[in-house]
Every structure is written in C-alpha cells, then in structure tokens.
Length: 88
Image (cartoon, rainbow, N blue to C red; front, side):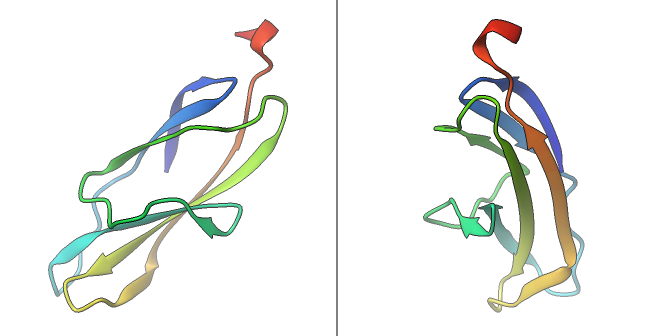
C-alpha cells in the first residue's frame, strides 16, 4: 500500500492488484483495524477522509475473491502519519 497526497485530513491510498486463482472481486480497507468501505472497492485506490492531523494510522488492504474468501496472503499494510496543517 502506498499513501500519497497526504494532507491534514486525508490521504490517497494505492496498491498493486492482487492475483488469485479465483477472480478477485474487490478489496477492503481497514484503518486501525476498522473497515472503512461500505462496499467492496473494485479499483486499486481509495481516498481516506476525516483523519486527524498529527496522528498515526495503520492502514490494511485485503483482497476478496468472487467466492467471498478473504486473502491474508494478499494483505497490504502501511503506516501513515498525518501532517499538521501548518506543515503542508
């Protein structure tokens, strides 16, 4: 997982597409262990919003195949630190 366009209240996440023997249906994004998307994400990017400046977040992305299986082997982790507005 790569975080870019990090600002004081959000960041854009991007990741490499997962490969699976069953078609990947989408991805789930977790922020500090809590899922943030209501539906599977079908692209390889997601915009995080509503974050707090000067706070560290752990981001995890998991792949889900068409059969509904969660692939831990395709787990992507990243730690981001939000910038203070005055540091942008």
